[in-house]
Length: 312
Length: 312
Image (cartoon, rainbow over all chains, first blue to last red; front, side, top):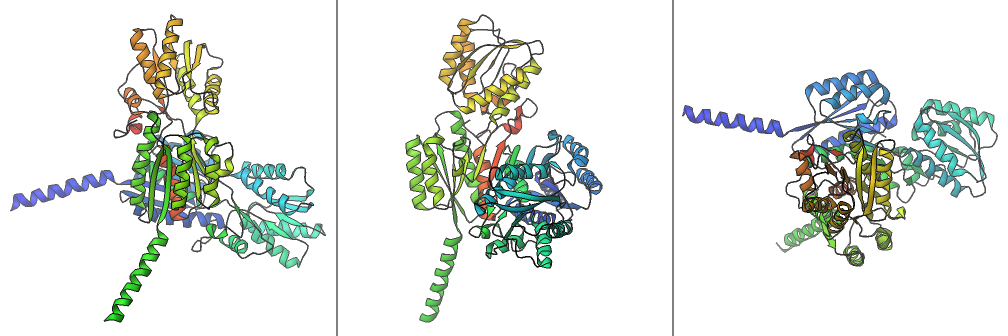
């Protein structure tokens, strides 16, 4: 009897070892929700983690949020010590996180960078992000179609970093040769409050504004607030970008002030996690660059971009 | 009793209808194996179809091979009549297939184009392909590192189409400023037999050849045959591309004649199918462009690129 028991224990140990070997770990490091969009990232990362663990019973997915760059660097070190086979990371500031990410890569971990590209591309195996020039171009194409006889518009920019430049350059290129005139432009830092202040300033300075391009759904909230407070009826519409629940709902409901939105969706984190898992579990080579399209969200297709359970 | 039976039947009907509604169909249209690489595409498409139906119990995947462009156009029409929610297509000749694909898209089907990009990009929702300039650049970087003092090389090109130009231009750019000299270059049409003939010609014309860049693993088979028949020992190595089983095995085994290979893998069909399914089943926006990296396959990493059950 004793021999049999030992046998069973040994088998149990072996099975345990085999399972431990087969189980792979993916860590997902993202910013804590500091604005609507990152809130969406957190939501979709958690949803996709559940979906992936169901699709791949051998996969464990850990989602870790960090409030700032320094904490994120520490989090990467902790995760790396615990052991992970792949890291999907949306860095606070990619330059600040470059060295911490490189250290993780040097241990043989597969690295997927999301959204915010690092200057040093050698730290990534896979990059998944939105199409920033495409976002500006899609917005411009809509203005061009909506304003065949031109008009006076104001532009609220993001932060003075390359992403913003790419968007704005493509927008300006897109309206070139039309009668659409940008009568004012200021940075709104992709912040709801800052955009509110900028829009208030525009409304004070300009007696007539035909439309607003504000590039970002969080900023659009501030813009709409400022317009409502000023009780101005000259502004015909606002074009933003991201694909937030609130703005997609306005588009879906046919709100004339928000006829379209441009996609730059936090669901990109889910795409990045899915493809990374394909490489990890099914051994398919997935290294490369995946740029998600800045689709125009219209009344007709808005339901495809509406995530009713997401906070964003 | 009769009432109860009718009730059960009604419930069964409703359940049947709900299931029928939920079941989605993805069609995968690819060329019949006309050379090694397309053989790999067929194998990986079938493998991924099985994997996806397991991951998504609500998904049906149909893989259809066609021997030429005209048959593929007919196949698309048939598949479209049967009804499909998404089409993953690797076209024989993208220009010939543009109109048939557009017709499918107009019915509301999601279109993923793989490898061979069409001039009219509006027919695609998603594009998944290899990195052609990257393939040339990776090969050039290896030649540069392997031949610090230069050498005389011959280049066998593919077909005179843009893919080949992108590869060759990037290669030439990469060896610029070195002492590596391309002493001869001819088209091998990505064909094993044609490459054999071209290499025989090179060997007749040139008494000394240090190395060969032939861009493609199928062509490498012909190149090795020609070298063996001519019993020439001056050629130090051959660099090809794709990641075929035979060539990856040579790299893995440390064959000095094949020190590296450059990835341009038929597994791209599996990546395309996986991402398309994510959009279809999990409703994640996946439209965009995904360029897979032309990774350098070396003795150290070759095992990651070796698919023992694949015919290619």
